[in-house]
Image (cartoon, rainbow, N blue to C red; front, side):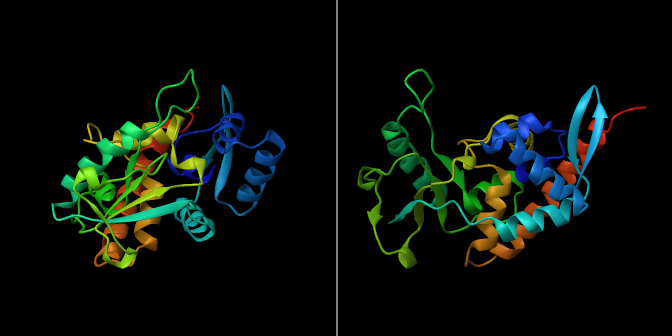
Length: 229
């Protein structure tokens, strides 16, 4: 729920509950707690909606409390530039990815970490790449070799957290920040978490740049959506 509020878009309780995959009573409980902390506020404009009122505090709370995507990771070494490795790996993973349901479209891998951050808020192209994928696959056809984590130039994570596949306001927010990207991106707040949890050179600086970019974009959205008297 927090990530959807952090976009600056006004959200109904029903929408937030649906995005989080929880019931309305639990959503109400969470929103009441966040409102009591002064981080979100309720507004009435045609229908009752919620908006963030203390963006930095809510973001810091989410970053500190989010347990991570979970799941299982595989680690790979390549000799090409990071984006070249990612494109080759993406093609293999995408071909192996199943549909969400028989009637739904195929689930696709998404780019995370520093390379995704560079799409959202250009700063520096990292030496290590991260892909979130629905399934694991053998990436040797993509010119990659399985290695230990400390030697990897590419990590593939099949996450346990279903929230990495954004919808609604979060998906729109991401597309606005990075239109026309070469590969699907993980949502920008997850990418920020990737950077803050990374142990790589310049990850802190890249996280700071992305955070400022997200704050400005969310403030612009919130300004547009403030109900007019």
